[in-house]
Image (cartoon, rainbow, N blue to C red):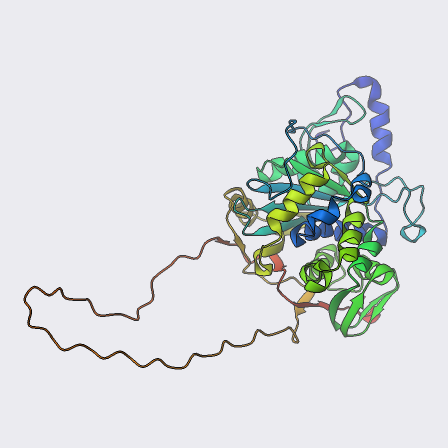
Length: 437
């Protein structure tokens, strides 16, 4: 029974456990909106939006009831300013449609799978950040988890990671990822997908590049090759599509969403957004109004302190990565040693450098902006060489050399099996037409 959803240690509740598992079902296209929202939370934090704006009463009042994590301890709320040290935060996107817009499906749907699980890591010195995605169909070992309704769940040796939210709530997903990666994760957020349209609209739309036509009858997404500025429902549809991008699978859909998130980061960090109080306010409200936070994170001040720590990180130091996986029956599994090497680098607080591609769902943007070449300075006339001296007490000056000084670049270069991109990379969606589906 180790590979089954096990009952609680409280035997009188066994039937209830089975019934809850019976509600697990594969979600429709709306599931993928959670992926965008989970990434968007990290993106908004990375953007470093105005502390003054997010500290307003209206935004603070929109924060939902918090969730207690197993490893949490009560401590003082940080003052407004950069948070001390590094941060590990798990961002979980739920496919629940309860209370959501009708466009996502029936409002009485009880599905509650974490179809996105992403780890946001902020370095100790606040010089770099990474957002690491775990595919929803990845098989993992689930530890014993406390049941939010009382009692506990037994451990399981192999289940898909997206069942952990239904099984034991946000705290169980955190415990699972901690066991999987060996990291301590004191912050967590469960994100709803109802705010996707307001978030993309808040910045005035997000530009995306399409390399070849996207056709998806399941989501009604039809986009020609070229650049599109997507907001509201159009952005929602773009992020929901799976059949219309790459090879039609979930892994290439993650590539497509990383493209969108990178563009969103650039849009948020632009002067047009950060100098507009209305946009900053709308972004903050969209985030806080559509997520459940761990107790440790359930403070606008804490959120602001993370934003302040990240606001000056260069775009090329914000890395979006997908964990290396290989196919197995019914899903995917971690590829070793690349998987362990990735999280050993995170645990050591090393900057991550990608060596692989952006994934099968995207290609390089041929029209990406090119930095202007630096203007060469006018040559400087060499100073005259003084005449040789015959003074026996003079000290010989060593000749100058043009040889470069050997330096070792900081950070860890990841395996080519780790796909992804940095926030400063411009990529285009590799579209898929109906005739190829």
